[in-house]
Image (tube, rainbow, N blue to C red; front, side):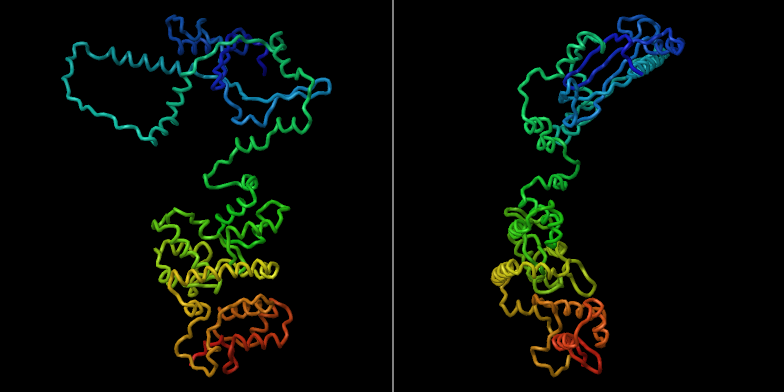
Length: 492
């Protein structure tokens, strides 16, 4: 249904709010119009008396009001287009409004009803009733309004209604769609000059990519970026943001999160500025998580102290897969909440094994980038020398972490260098895979037969030669009564 042929009685607008109201006459002689209902509505709204402010002067609902709402708050993606003589003329829009029927007259009818009820209640009260006795009142002074209370008041419905009511209506003259003035206004949709822009400039003006990105932002926490927003940042900032959020990540996963076609050499250059290599995986640097002049959210410890403690935890994971929380806490002497946070960044708790590093060793990255691995190893040696001074360790104390202490009640004739509980180590050769599988077997049982080890190696690595199995067992295990044990774990 259109209203082009209906008489428009009035039109008005609030330009700042982009609000429009139209008054349109109703056909009261139409067979579809209920006269009695129209008279009843007029009576409810205006009452029986006559006043210049009456909504319906004819004592009948003979007009209808349409009010606008904004169809969208972001019009940067919309335009009005006109095609003429092979030319497409596009005009940007500052607002899109949708007209809907207004039922404000019902509110006016409700107010009239309440006024009549109040008048009736007042008339029933006795005129002879004595005046009420005077009562003491307490005077209280309002406290100064806080900024938070002020913001709540500004965002309240009553405040918004009051602000909207402050803008005056501007009355307009309505012209129909076929009116000469309307046709004259439509001519402004066509470009009147001939010096057209080149295509690239025209498209840039029509759809500026950066302007739209600034206007449309996803609703979410202030410290969270969408992937679309992330990829608008420089490569170094992308890598830094990802590492701050993920904490520990293989290089392959990092490349998968970046845009396709990103140069891996450039990413390697960026990742080394914000992360350190631990077991072939990248862990965000401590000074990136705890910038200078900041403090712990848990205990208020300065960032410099937090960085030293976290560096110690990361360094320990360069030597072994698992660490004990109590031992870490006794060395770095930081509050338990901070120690737990350090460990949660890079490890997960395991029953009877302390905290185990989150990711498996990325041997493929170490093999593919030996220069990076060597450079990172040199960095860790420098960090180790600093830790020696900070925590007052000797190199022998550091080496103790590489080799587990012998269990008590062990009797063996092996040489001292062989009397060590097995610990997983990495040399960069293919044989590291054999050692990791052997370690996994012994995590389930402290003694196994040779055929069990051989079957597990064959299952994971395919055909394994007898020489490789002999080498593995001689390096890491000792035999007793037909069973194989990790070196140093044979019970007396």
